[in-house]
Length: 394
View 1 (cartoon, rainbow, N blue to C red):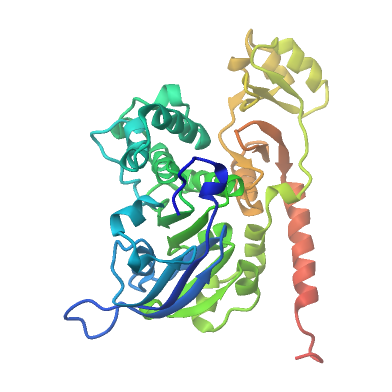
View 2: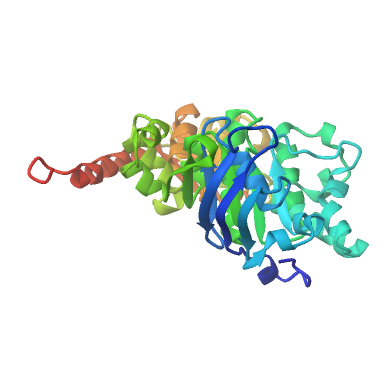
């Protein structure tokens, strides 16, 4: 499974199969996990969702043998994991947990380089990989490489945790509620980052959460688990939202299933708008001219890497000598991989009712406004109505 030559193909996702996998702890009358059978397709994100105590984390940890199965078979890329050395197995599987789990006495760079060092990479290769991984998770290597975890925000620590999990280019990434300990805004940003990374890297990701909305947003497939990891439904988010298998699954879906369809639509699927822009090193007069005289017109100030920094009107641009002082900061943005639900939340919290859309490296792509999202909701409701059976059909 390991990437021995650091080629991209070496880290592409592989299929994971669980066959009648169970875990029974000594002295316990019932199994913690009972006869789980499922196939996780190569290169997909599969989310295990269920209430606390359902066994979802135990099931995931048996994949890399942090917990040893009592019975059953687990294969990764066709290899029986029970026949592999457990330490070697874990070095070939990325693992990201809540609150990042970083080593506090190591710098960010040393944390990211831990697994490549364990598998024998030389110092030059590790150093290059550390910088590559930090850049991948949108942390400037020059700024963050030599910091310690305590000097980072919760969201930054979680990014480092993901970078460390991906550093040796593993085909499989296990994620145990990795974003559960951060605030809602940061959590949304980290979810967007994960979707962007997955679009680039194509890993096989097993993601544990108790949050069904997070499962719908991130998962190619969702496994809704009941007691002892009994699989109540294993399907695409669209199928589960449209046809919950039973009342328990319907309880997870909750009210507003039609509105949850916004979580299945990505910003990249709609036509984004544009506003006038100017880079930070241009004159305020340039942005003022581009905005013109239209009442309520607003533009964006971009940095030298084309990333959005500030919103400004013509009046605000004309009142300063430098554009880095104009208007107000861009507080929130959404990526092309973000959901329309994310876009709606960003729009509703913005003073002008507009959300900035950014690309894979945070560069400006366009904007989306409330009218665009409302038109999409209307279209989804019409689709939903067409799919509902009539009295004659039921």
